[in-house]
Image (cartoon, rainbow, N blue to C red; front, side, top):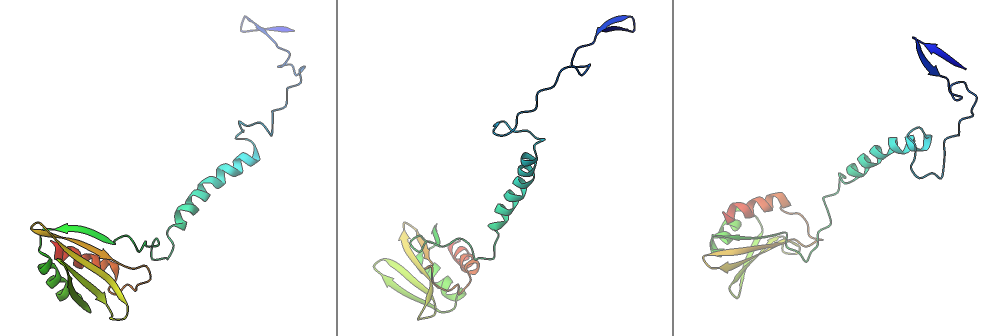
Length: 156
């Protein structure tokens, strides 16, 4: 059962002569998996699709994450005096009402019946601290990007 190939000695094994039955590959519940397994192939094909779907689900048409009404929308400091910032905001925004409470200046933005934003200007050294609150159920009038722009423009 041996043959010579190119002048060398080559032994033929029983497996090569098909005399030995090969063991079947282990299947379920073997935990290492096998890329040839149909279930594994399906999982490998579906995993990227599931990841893409999860990523796109965050891109819905909602206005964004739910706002916590107890946290300020903006909280910044400025080198400008509270009076300057209040005058600047009054000139840029419509429906603004200003009041003084102690040393702070409070500005309500929006309609009289339903304020959209509450801005508190507190003096700090030569400047001021600006805190903007936007209640969760309040309308966006003016829209939030416009409000943020006006605050930034008046604070610098």
